[in-house]
Image (tube, rainbow, N blue to C red; front, side, top):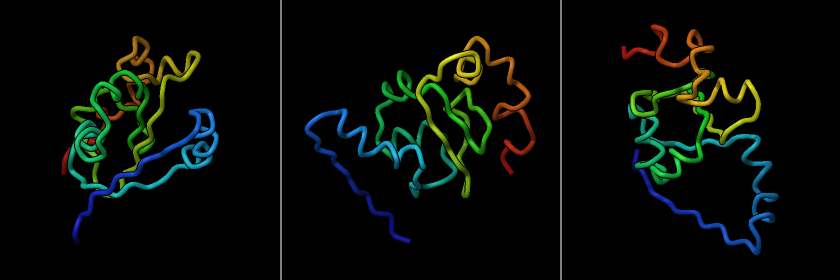
Length: 121
């Protein structure tokens, strides 16, 4: 299989209009085919091209196969995995699910990296 790189550029008269147009797509989810076996950070920054600063400052909550992720430098994405991204969510649940948050210990039993299904092999 030949991998092709592509670039999409959105030009809109206003950020509000762009958000209104793309919100249904973003809320419904979409698929991006990328290599597997890399960490979340490698896939987001190197493969997709999101800046490391943007990932650190804006993507506050991540789920890999429905499990919250704290360390994007070690969480590995494998074939068939699902990765969900979010900005900061409000309230106690948002604070608990936020990566590296002070309340992350409340969800330690469901977090990525805490079970045998998260190990290589």
